[in-house]
Length: 367
Image (cartoon, rainbow, N blue to C red):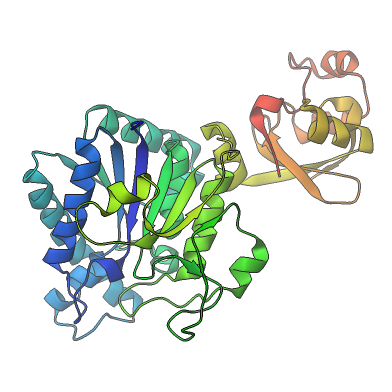
């Protein structure tokens, strides 16, 4: 069997007992399954929820707290407990774990984004199991970010994973809620995820988690756009993850052989970069960008919107105002106002810039 790089995401509902506390039995079962993947030579990154669920009882809460302060406090206590249990459980297999706490801001900052990639790459090279969670003790938005579903998709993209496994308490995707409709039809495989399918899917999660099937579909769609295939489902026992990568998993496989990988630079441009302005292009430039894989040249520009500097990220719009791409610009907005519509040679002469391209295709992503 081909050795793979796999991201496994475990939600709170798959880690907790009936009263909402951390279930050591469930945690050990997940660890056993991940250890089997590792023993077969696969690289594994674990995205684990459960910090709030693990910590709230230690603080005397009778149930999962609903206030921001309560959840942050529970996460601060529970994260250390969660990592302690993981570390001790993986130590049974002489496997080393590492903790990484992230927020969305870590992905928006380009230097931090590169650091995430470099740190994860080095940990995997040294045969360590990175265990990643959102930094719920300080990040307000992340507590309603989808129970780590989207985070797992972004991580799977940044490390060019072969597969993202989203473990949950429902065995895959159905045409309607199987808990309410006994005749619900299960999908064993879908090649893509449409916006319509996402809108039709329930967003509700469990009492101990913040995500639901809708957040998992959004995460899967993001992962597919980054070139990573997905599995959404459940399983029992130490072989459950091996079953998934062998095509025998109890859930829904999402993706196709045509799923194309996206470079880290273009992932950052497309999903995380901050837009500083916009460039409007004519129909000829639009066709060259979309159909011919060309860079953007001054000759095709008709309008500049906003103020931006060299290396800022800008939107590229067609004359109807629709965004068609975004990328890092080699000219300032003031310079482009002077040279829009010019040939590249003349533009370089006027601005004294070395670059012929306003936005090079290597630093551009089509939307």
